[in-house]
Amino acid sequence: MDHAASEKRILQIEARWAWFTGAMVTLILVAILYAGIAMQINPPSNREFIDPKTLHLSGEFTEENLGTAVDASGQVTVRMITTQFAFVPQCVVVPANRPVTLRFASPDVIHGILVTGTNVNTMVVPGYVSQVHTEFTKTGDLLMPCDEFCGFGHSQMVGQVRVVPASEFRPGPDGKATCG
Ligand code: CUA
Image (cartoon, rainbow, N blue to C red; front, side, top):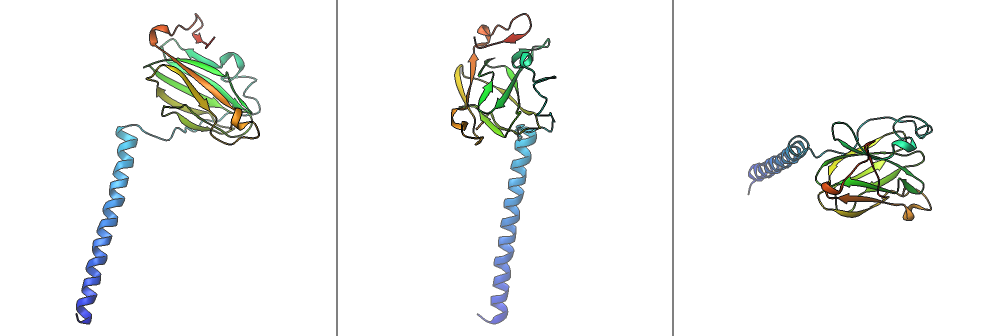
């Protein structure tokens, strides 16, 4: 092969790789857009601020607002505080096969939560409200361990999500439901 011919061959191979790389990048971009727009799979984060020093004193995350609450429109919202080294409340009850919004806040350090066997998995960063929308399909007691190292008691930090059939989910007159 003379010099010009081998040069041409190299350019051909390079062009082929360029096309291949471009196609892969396009494919990945399309997959990301499809997951985000059509399947609504997004990072669980939203930008919502809360003062970690005062969140227990007033507003949404005071003690009486924690746990599961059903509002007038039937929307189920769970509010929990993640703290060294416990979830407050330790157990929450939710109905199966209904949209549930989980909201978390931390007064101290970064924690992480995941609910085993579900797609619920988020970090809880002081200063922000972490929010996850989900629907639990299987009934039973699901473990919710902290999955972000948060100190010496990290391995003891486990919460519980009790998923009950919709017919057994009976919030009180104030819309609140508890595990007890
Ligand atoms: Cu909280 Cu690890």
